[in-house]
Image 1 (cartoon, rainbow, N blue to C red):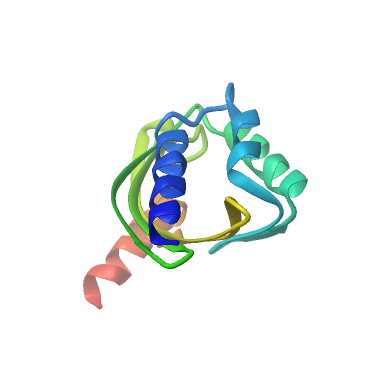
Image 2: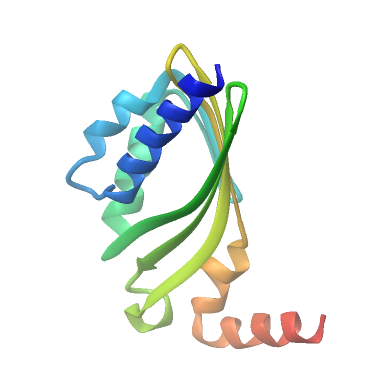
Length: 143
């Protein structure tokens, strides 16, 4: 199973390295129709909800890219380390921001059935809000 998982992970990485609002339909090749996707702010179940989530995400940002720097496969599971760079008009005056994270991916029937992203939501959003960002950074520095 590790060889198949490695091939599926490579396909996943290739898709995400080039993911944008113009090629979201390609996600259907990656995700199982019963997929569960979670991140610190969302949980969606089923491919149609996942597609709607990504559509909203890419409509809200001016720019978004993923750089997957490392991955590890074991059985039907993969773990990926990445940096997401994005630009949102309401965060930090629309300047590009980067956040590091990792993903836990589980495959079944040749597709992703479970996808959980782990990242610091404070770093991603709250630190990009002018007054709140300064407070959050100050609190983190004091820890």
